[in-house]
Image 1 (cartoon, rainbow, N blue to C red):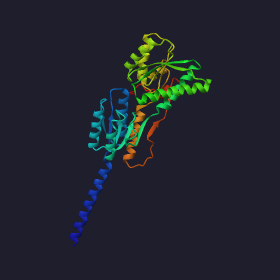
Image 2 (image 1 turned 60 degrees about the horizontal axis):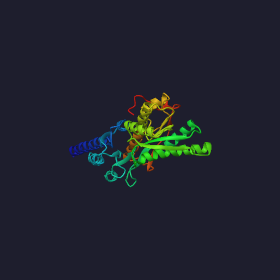
Image 3 (image 1 turned 135 degrees about the horizontal axis):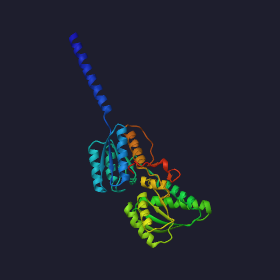
Length: 325
């Protein structure tokens, strides 16, 4: 009888130890986080990816990165593969606002916590929130800064846009133009701004250069260049220098690219707005991680990072020459 009792005790102890061990292993299991990027061939997206990846590691998770290379169908396949690999969180920068809806909904149905970052996704999609900078608020600050600098001088703006029909580009230029008009009305009681021409730069430095060359030929009275991102304005600046045109103020509705910030420090570029890929990406990861850990959150459909206009007076707060972007 005693022998049987000791045998039962030993058996119970071993089972209990096994349960504790398996529980500890479960507790230490890393949360897999899929990071689905629409593209990685530009510094902004590379910086977002690296920041998201690093934040996952800091939180004790396991990042799995997929690059769609600008192809919507590949991103759809990437998301399916990530779900199959057991991710608990998906952070996605969608290549198409409509085309990724079904994939995101399928991931959510599989129990994955989905956070969208940077690019918009149709709100029919079932995701926790979209993390991005506020294009409208940032743009308004840039527009206000421009009027503060130019006073009551009539503004003759050459507008360089990304690509036709892009909702982000429209939000950005609308924000700046609204900021200009509201500030002019407040200061002078009238609006004195004209967009003398619009070029399409495809979001790139080279595209901005080519668009600006055409705008300079067609318009002799430009005193402001407004670009929907820094990269296109940097290209436009090269065209202006080559044409030896003077008296043109350069502004961007977004991003805070380090090359633009270096020129702002030197007084060769007016202002840009903060669209920090690292801040956007880390915020998205934090939200997804908390959701995967069962921490209840009341989230708006869009989560905005704080807006800011970057100019010579505050550029040192943001400039990091070693940054990817």
